[in-house]
Structure formats: structure tokens, C-alpha cells
Image (cartoon, rainbow, N blue to C red; front, side):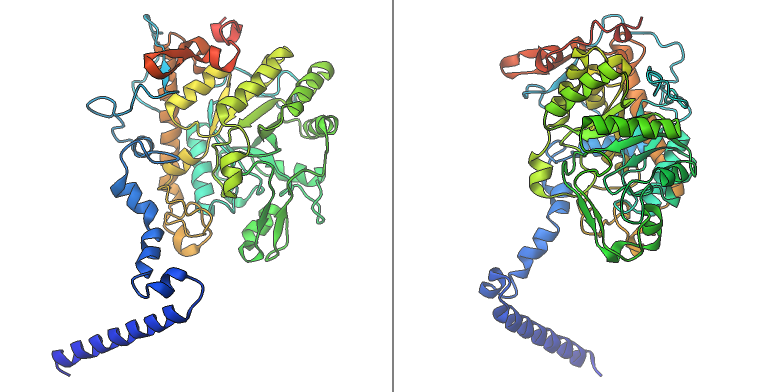
Amino acid sequence: MTVGLVLAAIFLLLILFLVGLVIHDLRQKEHAILRNFPVIGHFRYLLEGVGPELRQYIVTDNNSEKPFNRDERRWVYASAKEQNSYFGFGTDNDLTQDGYVIIRHAAFPYQAPNDPGHPDINRSLPALKVLGASHGRKHAFRPNSVVNVSGMSFGSLSGPAVEALNAGCKLAGAMQSTGEGGLSIHHKQGGDLVFQIGTGYFGCRTPEGKFSLERLLETVSSAPVKAIEVKLSQGAKPGLGGLLPGVKVTKEIADARGIPEGETCKSPAGHTAFHDVDSLLEFVETVAGATGLPVGLKSAVGEQKFWNELAAKMREQKIGPDFLVIDGGEGGTGAGPLVFTDHVAFPFRTAFSRVYETFGEQGITDDVVFIGSGKLGMPATAVSAFAMGCDMINVGRTAMFAIGCIQAQRCHTDRCPTGVATQNPRLTRGLDPASKSVRCANYLAALRYEIERVAWACGVDHPAKITTDQIELIESDWRSQSFESVIGYSTVDNPRRRGS
């Protein structure tokens, strides 16, 4: 067959394909664009499909992308790879925009006696408070790292991703929350864990889906679980349950969650083990008494009545959670309905300040370890959280960046191109836990070092000693206002923040 005949055959097949496509487009009724513009209408859907990638690499500037812009991602990637994370030629941010954070450095910075001059995964930055000490927990401890990894379940993340995060936490001396999906084999790479109890009680449930203390004891004894957090809600989809289709319930996921393989699994919106503040406090004390571990709550913030009642009863009864993980509405490693991700629950600054002030009014802020969560994985936002009263912070999506996430925003499709947020074996095979764990550890170390350096610049030796009067927010007309005036309380008079 000559070349001319081959080309003619190809041309004929192309014509037949286009004719068939035209007929299909004109007859189908699902897409009006295709009925009105056969063939060329497909380009609209093609461009829509690759829109995030086009915007990410071609259209947007360094600061316009959401939820994390190009500069932020570049800093995480460079830090994780131990590359040069500096930026040249000054800032390209608009320093006059409303709400822009300015950190007030001291005229006489703190002179760190053992400054390594660079991030070091072997250099810890321990918390100032002992977790569980105020309530006399048997296994109270001082966390080695003020930066830890947020709860991201196996199921939402791939097995290799969970392995990389856990092994990275081990290298960096940090902790990893399991998320509500139970404790899987992928969590057992040696890193310390915070076991999360969600509404589905995965890893600590009866066959009927109720809470089982016996199963909880079995689970926490199988791995280095240092604390337990009871999840009331999260920033990604506060006040909403979840559904995992049976086709996604693999044997590994079923084993971790304690559910039948291949059956659809539902997470209720609320807990069945307790129903009000009194029963919640009883539940916390039961779990803490049986395990000896510090027990805390993780929650986004909505109604204020709950926090008022919780703080008041904790003061009166001298019992309750040892720590509070306050999640901002801008947090969201998981997928959720648009109205929930965009409009339900307060953003972190509003959420945390309301809770912290409530506990301050009861005089019990020193009895609780406050942990911030919700887009706090960059140095400036982390420092702001410490100034507001956080003792520690948790990071989620930035930790995902460190192990390969490119913000493709395909988390809900099972088509994550980097193998981080998918269960597709073809995609997860591309994620190497051994190398990515080192990058996770490097990122955690870099974030710790950056916030520690900012603390030194502010004249204190620890980021938890930064106070509200050392952070200001820019307003229009070149004016500014202090954090204290915005959030309504001061951390200046707290002896812990003065360093005494």
C-alpha cells in the first residue's frame, strides 16, 4: 500500500468520525451547546476540564490563586526539597491591602544561643504546655513539635500518601492525626499518632456502628497513639456527615474502619455516644480514664452557646478536654458541598478568637492546650495564630504539597494526578513514600524554623510567646490596627507569653 493510499484512508476515517460525531451531537439532548455547535462545542468542555491547569501555569500571577498561590506553593516545594526558598528583588505583594499582616519586630532581637542557621529535621521545637497535665492524665506529655499534621483519613488520601506523612512525622519528631477513617496499616511507619474519633466511630465501633470502648483500647494499643481527639466537625464540611460508596470500600479501608468490605459506609452528621455538653464531658472522661491518654476536641466554630456552656462547666467541674483543635472554615483537605465549604463555619481568626476569649473569661486558658487548624501552614499565618493564643498548630494541605500535591483540585474525582488524594492504583504507584517522607519532614522543619526565627525577631525565644500587640493589620489610607483591637482580648498580660 502506497503512502498516498494510507493518507487517503486516514483522511476517510477522520471524515467518517467527524460525521458520526456531528450526528451524535445533533441527536443527544444532554448538552445544548453540542446540539447547537456540533464538534466545535467539545472544545468548550475540553478547556473547562483543563481550566485549573491553564490558570495555574499560564494565566494567573504569583499571588492571585486560591486557596494557595504560586509563591506559597513554591516556598513549600523548595523547603521540602531543601532548595533555596528565598525570594529575590523584594516583595511583589500589595502591602496596602486591607487585612495585610505586619509583624512588629523588636529593636533588640532575641539572640538564640544554638541557632543552626538552617532548618534541621532533628531540631525539635517543643510546646510550652504539657498535654493532659491539668487534668492529671496518666500519659500526659509535652509534644516535641509545635507543628503537626492535621487529620486526613486513609480513604481520602491514598495509602502511600498516609505512609509518607507518618514516616515524615517520625523523622521530624511531629505527630499525625489519623483523621476519622480509622488507624490503618499505613499509619504504622513509626510516627506518633493522634487517634481521631469521628461520628462513624471507625476503628472503635460495634458492628452496628455504635461506639465501642473495647475496640478503642485495641486500636490505640496497636500503634504509638499519644492522644485522642473527638471530632465534632471540620472546616471542610462542618455539621455534615459523609458517604463512602461501597465500590471504594477496599479490604484495607474496611479493615481500618471496622466495616464490611464492599458495602457503602455512612458517617452521620452527629455523634450517638453523647448528645449535649454534660454527656460529652462524661464521654471525654470515660475515654481518658480508660486509656490514660490526653483527650481533646476538634471542631469548627458556629453557634456560641455550646462554647459558653462547655467552658463554664469545665471550670465548675474541673474536668473536660485536655486540648481543643479549632478548625477554621477556610480549612478543607476533603471535598464538600459548595455552600458548606464557602459559607458554613467561621474563618479561623474569628473562630479561634471567640473560643479563646470564652475560655479566658472563665479563667481556664492555662488548663487547655489550644491548637489552631485551617490554612495555617505558611509562616505568617502560623505566627498570627500563635499571637492569638495557639500553643500548637496543625497543617494539612501544605503537608500534602510537601509530598507532591500540585493543587489540581481533583480530590473529589479519584483522579488526583500525583497519587495523593486517590485510591486509583495506576495513580498511587507514582507516589514513593520513602522519598516523600523526607520532603514532609523537611517542610515541617522549615516551617518550625521560620516561625522560630520570627519569634526571635520579635524578641522572644518561642513563637507561643508572641503577643497580640506584636501583630498589626493594615487598613486603607496607610493606617493599621493591632490584633488586640480586632479580636478583643490581649495575650500580653499572660505570664506564659511574657516568658516568666
